[in-house]
Length: 328
Image (tube, rainbow, N blue to C red; front, side, top):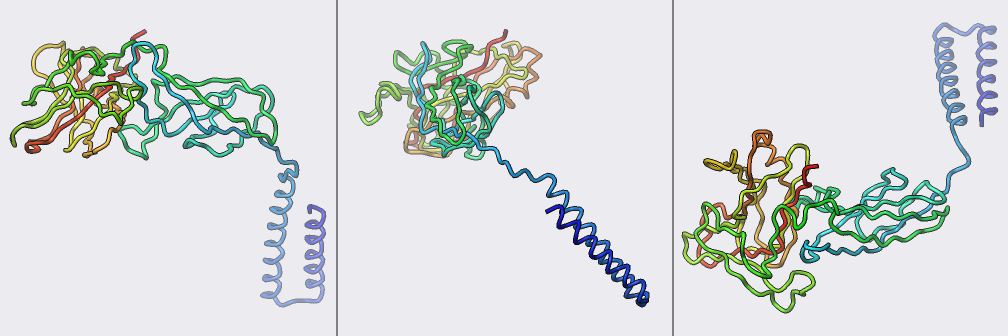
């Protein structure tokens, strides 16, 4: 390719020299000169392309994740999760984020390689807000990767072993509804209900909490009844729970300076009604940050209706986890 480009460049140069000898007009000469310049320029680009062209292409190995498992550790409740993606790293380098099950994913690695797979979720229930969930531990495996061959992985996910157990706050309603409050604005107390047979025990347990409006003026609110400290600065804070609701509900955090005086609220998002049990991961990191954590705030989360939804509306909730990495 390079030799042919040089030959074509020499040919056009000879034509230009001959034209000068035979006496072309000034305009014709300038036109031919321009053609000569453009041809040489494009020829040089062509030569450069030839020089960087690598006829030997690397053959990748392939990684595939057809499914995964999830289990909770001691004192971390039932196996509710909504993992939708996996974040894959090969020898410390991220090769991408993929929905499960994945296709065969190319990886330019060969021989014994360290494969790290992390669980991805949709923060705040927003499909486009995909995050590597910081509280699920990485699945790590060393595997001999071979060119052109597919290696299949079945990652096993669980909560990070460095987490405080059973989290900053946890309630699955299996024993009681202790630690539960109807909050500052709520007018109805929470009641314990039994899951229908269609909801498997392994998924949700036996019981859940439910708040139902009795009159048109009732307000529904659920919160933890004890103010807690959080390791706020630069650390992720999430509220997980399973829920279903007949009305819109707002999720947020309350902060109280030095656990005294009046509390301030910072709302995160509004959840739409849903008739089926839904798992959500609410990211409260930014909301907690608004309270100037260095001043010594204490916190309670809240799940509540923004106004009176009318009689007969309800919020059902289960497997609540307020999660934050402990201070070192």
